[in-house]
Length: 428
Image (cartoon, rainbow, N blue to C red; front, side, top):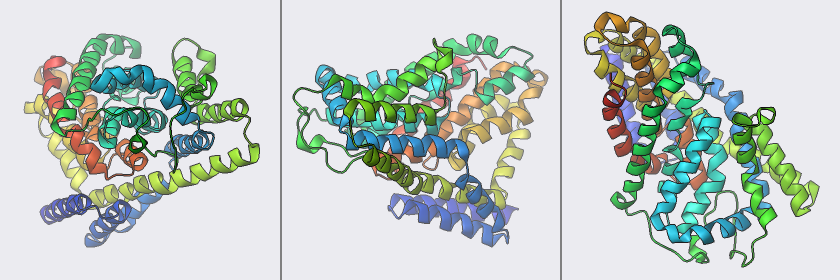
């Protein structure tokens, strides 16, 4: 086992080095995962994990439908009208545009608790807006990732359901109790991500019609912004977001999945722009195909890498270490799931592993079950948010056509500060 863990550590380091050198991300992750599987004579484990991601219905529906919708928005130029309409009144905000966008994205995150789904829904709209205003694509992508913390307020979160169960509480009671702490963490995170603008020099004010400020998320050539944007066209990119928010809050009968919202958005765009239905249909399915190849492809490759870690026993060893750390449970809850989230890209796996193995025994070492459970769940989520192989990070990296490390390194400092503060905020 010790030899296996050493092998895992060496391959993880080599993988990170290869990603830093900007080798093809999917190739690196698949090669690393298979290498780990072969070295322990269990190549079927990373391959099985890889194939599991190939048919992950929730990710495929959210990501492919979002990219299909983004392609339609591009071909009808609704995105250009939206950017023109949105940037002109917001241009005077300067670098304050980024925290403003994060605040709006945080509201959406409550309605879409899936990190990858939230990134897929928000990215095509908000990233071009921020880049047009003068922010580099990497910090614009980080702003979307940094806005996902409020998803912990969702009653549909599997973590909330589990922690409420072992705490003998109603889910909504748990959420109400910890909402002030989660919102405090969210506010601190917005401030810290905004400060990364100065650390990485990611902002330079631009004129709204600077040709070099045009950012390609779902298109190849955008041209100049229209002088008089069409308001109905400009609504096109945000129709799915509005539907998702209304359905999750004040209009229950509008509650729907990300994929359904994207289809309704496509229908609205088709009708309002009076475009050729055949052309729109072709673009929608073409965008879906590109979404699977370019974004799902990276997530599938990441599944192979995680499977290799499982095959070598690295993940089981980490979980076992957490189980044996009851005397320092507060530190284990703060940093254990965080480290596991960074290494595996899965905050859910990290949080659930800790909350099933350790949290039920919180009273035995003088701690409260709900507090320990919420901290562990958030710790895993924070680790996922700065992991270069996390699904949401890969979605954003695919959109901005950059290495996942460009995004995750901008998330590292805010997430590390957050995980240190967790125990204090939630009185662990």
